Length: 442
Ligand SMILES: [Zn+2]
Image (tube, rainbow, N blue to C red; front, top):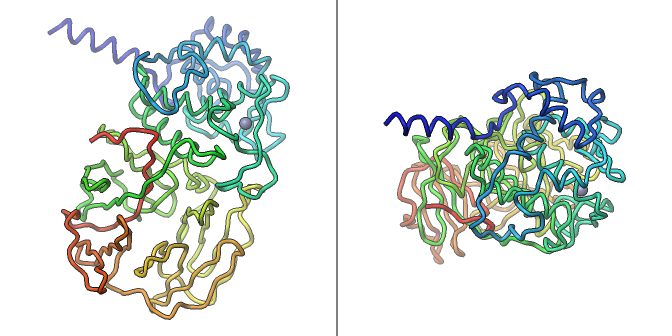
């Protein structure tokens, strides 16, 4: 018994922290080694700091500790794991690809950039989670060998001239190397914190679904419904009902490009669709474009991230009478569009099966938004039924969650019957994408 406790104590001690506040002070000799190995300009990061993560030097030391000490199993399969970088070599590979690292903010729209092997970490890097920062340095290191991005043919940057995507996953460019790292952490990682592993999976899905012009993962539509008592969510997929943990936050269930979140007006919290570990913590969504919420002061009336065919859009409403689109290439919100009605709610799917972005007023009038030209159309010739809470689609059928908490299925003759896979009473329902990049643990 004592021995078991002792051993598990050691295992705990070896698990790497995932929050800056949980890192111990860096040993001075270790810090010197990192600084030398990567030629870190500590002064630009705020001076040598071994303990306080508010100083950016310590953030970078934490990142390098995760890179140096992270361990991986060798057995295990995943579509992202191709052996681009040998799993045990991240630290040494990075060392050969890094001629120097400094801190600046000369290109604020970038998180970081690599100029001839010299990396400059921008303000965008400093505000990321440990995982996001580690992913960024690994990404930048790949550019040293000449791997470059191309214009995106899909996603948020579709149609923009800036080079933000990789042609294919097998090009093994910066995006590919970054995704391989996330997948290894998630699937093969042995000493990472469970939350760090979950974050890696979320990040891997959220980014890999748009940074490759030729998709590496395929999407299927599932139903995600939160129970009325908020105890859990049901993920309904391939005719199975799988229980998922829900962040214990008050807010609205929203679809995102990686799955679902609970959005409380100020922050969005990710729902883990793939793993079945009870994390007992709310993981803030810094993966989809809900990460833009970080820039805002005060609560929003609403926010939506949605795709029209292959192009991604994000809108925010600071109040119920105006709306802004996000201009991804410029990295700014456009000027607010004034509405001549007060919005009560947003919907992305209607009872007739139409999808898009719809603004609905208190009287139930539905105004379609044309995302391509940022126009608000005239009200449709039918209204939002006030007994409808949410509308989804499952295998060609329209599902309606009504205010009695029951999910109904619309029949071809327009009658409604109780949907047999909806086995609880629910407060919210969305369609969520599930990707084949990771196994959905039951
Ligand atoms: Zn890049």
